[in-house]
Image (cartoon, rainbow, N blue to C red; front, side, top):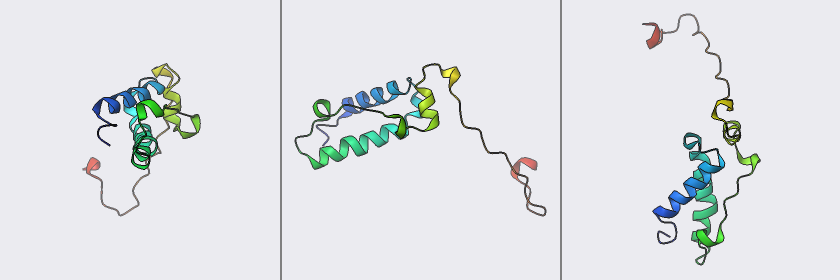
Length: 102
């Protein structure tokens, strides 16, 4: 497997995945690992003649992207909308104070 999926191929796949997400490396790890394991490594293990450089073409469809990943491919980093953080709730009465309130 190492002869087929070497460091050069890992870099090639990483570049392809980040390119499909507008070059935003920080949001690519989930999709990169999904593609590497499910679509490349599994096939290399199952089919001895499978060569990802020859037999695999990366495809990314919108249904497999999170909202952040889908927005990243829009091109303009200033236009990427991040999901809102949930509002912080106050601790219940009588609970221990958090480290921030000390």
